[in-house]
Length: 245
Ligand SMILES: [Zn+2]
Ligand SMILES: [Zn+2]
Image (cartoon, rainbow, N blue to C red; front, side, top):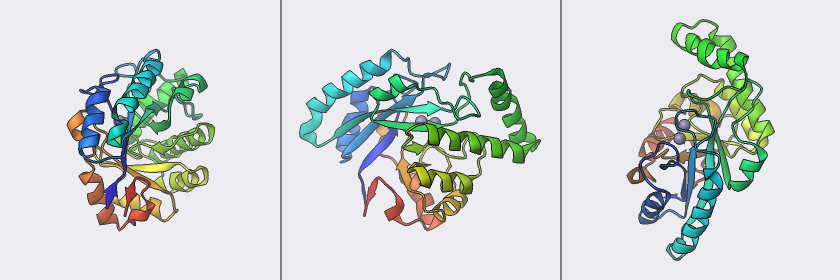
């Protein structure tokens, strides 16, 4: 089994500890063929990447691709975008997306919602549903629908840690994700997808991806925790996009 690439790594451009080059060097040392630099989307008010930095990151990545092509690595620019409305809006517009090679989507606290109603849903209703079960079913339905709308609106390559931070109907999400060719991530840093959710999703025939979600260079390529859950769930390695058997 070979890990082809790690497609979810953070840098100092959001709240990672390392530089793009640090991440690249570790990827090379671990024999990866590709690495994606995917900092948090600009809609996150604490550690979102600054919009003006996205083209600069692209330039830096082009330079590093030249410098390290002899090492057989391909470096991609991505963003871990955020859902900012229940209508499936994300914090990346067409102009910003043009700079990227890969687009991730996740749910995070700390985003600036698209409207007051979205804000109430994200910051009041969702936490209430999570902690007290109040309106839980409705919350799950609305959150799942937001993701489904987003993957139909934007070219999302995969959804990061689905089910972490907010509960989702994974079966429904997997079914719709398969239709548009969006994969579901088995994230090494977060416990989601969980074993139970991998089992639900794999029955829908959706593709998966395993990533480190490294926030420090030394974590790049560390996907052991993902593989433990893969093994426990009985998921076939053929269904994982970035693993070669
Ligand atoms: Zn995330
Ligand atoms: Zn992340």
